[in-house]
Amino acid sequence: MSSCKTKSDNFFPCLTLFLGICVTLSLSYAKETQPEDTLQVNHFLNKIQQWSHHQDSELKVTASTVIAGLLCFIASSISSAGGIGGGGLFIPILTVVAGLELKTATSFSAFMVTGGSIANVMYNMLTTSSKFGGKILTDYDIALLSEPCMLLGVSIGVISNRVFPEWLVTILFAVFLAWSTFKTCRNGLLHWKSESESVNRYVTLKDESYDGTSEEPLLKKEEINNQLKFPWMKLGVLVMIWFSFFVLYLLRGNRYGQGIITMEPCGVGYWIISSLQIPVAIVFTACILCRKECCQNKVPNHQGKDIEDLTSSGPSNKLIFPFMALLAGILGGLFGIGGGMLISPLLLHVGIPPEVTAATCSFMVFFSSTMSAFQYLLLGMKHTDSALIFAIICFVGSLLGLLVVQRAIQKFGRASLIVFSVGIVMALSAVLMTSFGALHVWSDYTSGKYMGFKLPC
Image 1 (cartoon, rainbow, N blue to C red):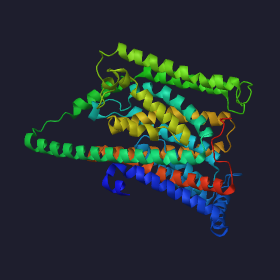
Image 2: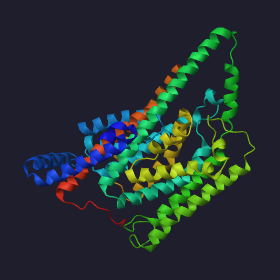
Image 3: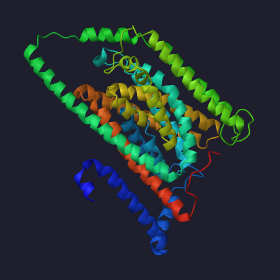
Image 4: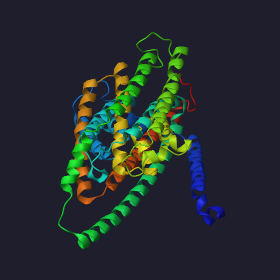
């Protein structure tokens, strides 16, 4: 105990050890104490499970579904400001409030994230920012370098989700989101501080040297000229990447052999086609990096810390975005949520401005969420009409959230509002998803189910 008090660096290791001892003692106590306390907890869990399954057979318009739709509308409004999908909020709302099973809620979440991301992509394509010279906020270079590895990471994460026990997934999810929330909120405070200094400096200069002139017509002209230079070639490459992975998913099918071709369930052909995603991601990433090396003499990009600066010096800097996307995809597939919630803090951490981070993440989430939605459709998803209704609700909520936040940013000059919205979503997701996972882990433990590592098939 003296070492914990003398050095602050040992706080987290000591805290982890303390929590581990508490968990071990509580589990051993649960085994030793007889039915009274344990039966009460099990009765409570059974009530929750009965409540959460009462609508799955036939989804109807009830008070609970209306409340769930309203909460999803609010969640999508908050999530859209940060350019993240919001799956970490949608899944608990649909399971606890609407009473859907986890599998059904996950498929609904894919459609809802797609609806919100469509609103984000449409808004960001049709608007420009005078802060960045009247250019579109979405950084298509980051999306190009990140998307192949993110789609590969999602597949790896899904397989890891089958192998890892639920208690390990819950712990990893809680630890990672707690760290991400802390980093995001700290970045938000730093952005808020720098924005306050910029606003004060601007007011001082304006009072000292105001000459009555305005550059607004020049900015509008620049915005019009830049709107004509849409990167259609980069968008075409992104669509090609998406289609390549989609074809592999169609050929592979699922682990039960359900696909467009007859295949042994989880057999040799399944794993061969699955492994083809690795060379596809490597080839696309290498081609994009080679093309960028050939175009290094072009005018650098407009966003704060340039992607040109991050990818032009040294192999480690060239691979920073693919590596982050691979990590975000693995964690997203492992935790069953979109990668936007995971890659957004990483982009903010390397110095990408909040506006560019939100627009770029929403663009990348669009590709990953549509991929998931199509897979659920091909596998015979139930309640598709209800899922589309929830997707439309999230589309409207995301559009409204974007308009409100962008208006607030223009009025107050606080782009840090985007960072704080990301932090709020991650904090709520950490609490809800961790609590939901903890209930499942406790239910499995008390029922005597196997809680170790499993085979992927």
